[in-house]
Amino acid sequence: MINYSIIIPTHNRHNLMKKNIKYFSSFKDCPIYICDSTEIKYSEEFPINISYIHMPNKSFIEKMNDILNKVDSDYVAICADDDFIIESTASSIVKKLKKENYVMGAGRYAGFDLPFDGFYSIYSNLPKVDDSIRFKRVISYLSNYYMSLWAVYKKSTILKCYEILYKSNITNHNLIELTIAINCAIDGKILFVDDLYGIREVNNINSDNWAKQHLTLLAAYKRNRKIIVKEINKLSLYSSNNKLFKIGAYIYLFNSLIDYLKYKFFKKNKIEKEDIILNDKVEYLIKQIIIDNY
Image (tube, rainbow, N blue to C red):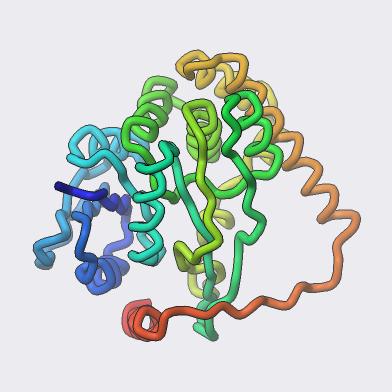
């Protein structure tokens, strides 16, 4: 029986494929699916536990909707193509989701910069989203938001999220993550653990990441409020609770504004990066992959 599956969406980043093959080929308890929407197919061979699925020119939402309908497991971990997730933590989260009937689980992240100079702690403020009342879960999560795009999910819940996104035909991709967060909180309890779950590239002097290439949802809202309101309304129509979805979305925007004002007017001295401790074997492997493939 398949314990869980890992899905890695990617687009125009064949340079990271070797990294994914080298790192995820050692995972033992789950199949890996790399969903590539790049026009040109990646031609190298993959190990037996990794399936490469070429989906040329499909959007992120389209390919996620497609693969989630094909994956044969009750739980899935969705991983960014430039992230490393810790196998032991992912497996532990899946066990807890099954046992305690949570719909989503995530843990702490460490970051690294390029040029590489070690790992440090990021995303440290974990919310508590385990109330039996869904209204309280939504309020709690969106008032103290923590990344939901890359996590472990009950497949039926995350598939529902991407079906909502597919039907709504949104144009602002920052609403993808917000839709997942709100609908997971509506659907059930969310688990956040203190264990290190993933490692990701934060700053790279040679390239731009998502944050540098896209307007934040708050910035897009300030620029053209009507478009964002229209898209939130579209998404809420397909959600299992129209009013609760809207409440969650506007709580998130309000708290984003508060955080922005705090940063702008009450900026503190630079915070020192907190070093993190990794399993020696995992740390060595990730360091070698970064040095060899980035």
